[in-house]
Length: 358
Image (cartoon, rainbow, N blue to C red; front, side, top):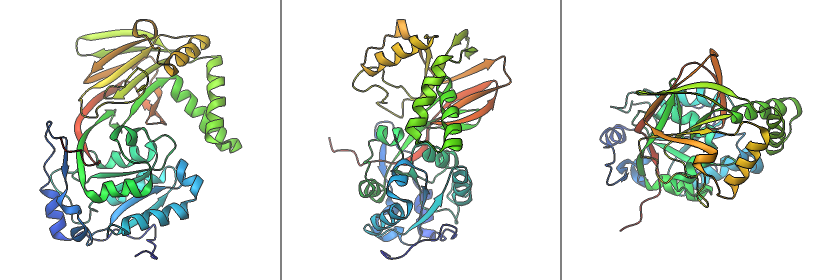
């Protein structure tokens, strides 16, 4: 096991029937006890089926250590727990295709005989997003190896950032059902935004294609260029009986509530709150946006002065444009309007650290 490699295009091993039945019998965690132990993931019963690891070769940590070294360390870590892992090395847009090929049916009521006992996203938030697209609403749990640059979702789940620690969480088999959010049928686990941020990401990716600049440098240059002429979007936001036309440089929709206070700025206390968190920036000029960001960095944000803040279960964003550039977990997509957002409570099963005893 320790000296073996799994070829990227090798088909997933068929899972043993007894492991399939165990996955079928898993009950969703209760609100009072948000995590449960998955009986099918002890050392003895996981052996008949391989866990599938989707390894993003372009993830921040993977790029630094080299994908061959990352691949070997992941296999070693799973082997230490007696678990076989199929490592699928992917790049960019091939992630979604690789996940769909191995995820099997999306029916949440059963785990198909060809489905792996779990699929693991080894990369950053974009990789997690791609795997969550396939697993939300199904019985197959998502494992996470935080090998990206920022790893927001893993951080808010309380996962270790080292490979052995993250693998140990998966091997322990403790899962929680967490919320995901959706816009026009596209899942996101962290947030979605319109305006300033997606424009910056598009500029960053254009630079990287043309000049091969480092990601952080390209983003810094994109930030400066975007601030010269901040994008202003005329939107109409609808939620139930509430409708609001507005002009903003940034509309931010979070999966659950993001903290705006230092030192937990940008963190989420829960991923099971069942709400969308809508922020609407009031800053319009580049200098005002810089002041807003500086106040955020020092924990000095003020809702009345800096932004509007709403908690909703669903909302619709309309625009005079037929399509809008939208950011989803750090990646950008062009989506047709109107944009229909909704929360999907406890629709994704994720491996999490075992809770401390009371």
